[in-house]
Image (cartoon, rainbow, N blue to C red; front, side):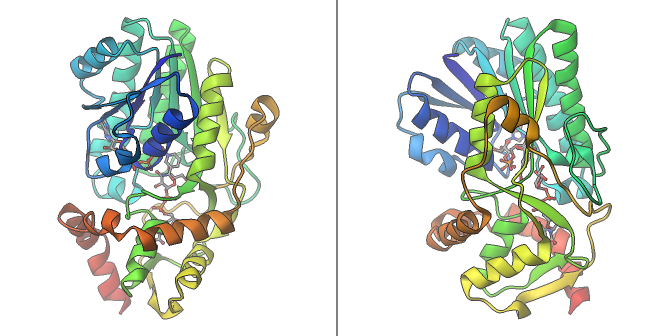
Length: 341
Ligand code: NAD
Ligand code: DAU
């Protein structure tokens, strides 16, 4: 591999991956291809913007012509796909863009790769494709029972990879990551949303009883796992990437409030998310045993550093919390918060 296309590389995890690829693989050229939706942000790529091994192309993964032109112009030999509509609540409000990007877009990337003879394709998926598990942990061979339009669209994308591996012999790999946190995460996901709201002493809308369980994974560890699978993963294989650190949402909220020295009175229990998955949990046995990957950060140190990053980097998030962000905030939370008070 020499020239890698990182689709969705202006988002949270994709930009971390692009920055790491530039730092860790100086012989590679990294081309970020991103539509710059509300979640795409060139500020995330500022640390590498002057690097000669980095290039940025604005484009939509559902656009055959734009994808093929980029693959050819940059002589791409591997694709790592992060591009997605990624927020569950938005998929409940309006599923359409999820089907377009997370299903059709994955197909367009695969078909363009096939046409141009690009045989290496890694796809970044999610533990949400399994659905909820009351106890125990999901393994890669377990059935997929996605419950939100987001999860269902991600499962659809994965199925396209399966078809391109089985039918055309493409060297595909998939990672199913758990709830990821760290710097540069758009402040709609619970961690950056609650951190930035608490910094402004605003109410934190916790869905339902707050006893849902998520498995927390630091973004640097998530990207190391993707790098490992990109280089060592076997064709057609799927690898879980869990944080192996399960917490109730109320516990994550308490951690954030404590780190910021803010009171628990900011918490508001609001109407639940429809179809809310109660618990996600994965085993990392396969990636650990077969590829030797393990995570390097503890939740406590990584989340404390993340809280500190948002405290220190208001320049990054304050300008996001305007315009479209406020429209979404109103649609998602105004009524919920009014009813909670
Ligand atoms: P994000 O929302 O921060 O970023 C998504 C990026 O994709 C943005 O830069 C956006 O502009 C781009 N994009 C969206 N539609 C596009 C299109 N049609 N064409 C080109 N670019 C487009 O998402 P994230 O949290 O960084 O997630 C990245 C990937 O990882 C997603 O595929 C997501 O499903 C998966 N994932 C996320 C998590 C998590 O906790 N955040 C966990 C597991 C897996
Ligand atoms: O599990 C991996 C998935 O994690 C990724 O595939 C998704 O892209 C990512 O968004 C994330 O999905 P979740 O729905 O778990 O993340 P979110 O941050 O939206 O919510 C985490 C938990 O917190 C969930 O149980 C819902 C709850 N929550 C969330 C928000 C935004 C609240 O209670 N209040 C909120 O305001």
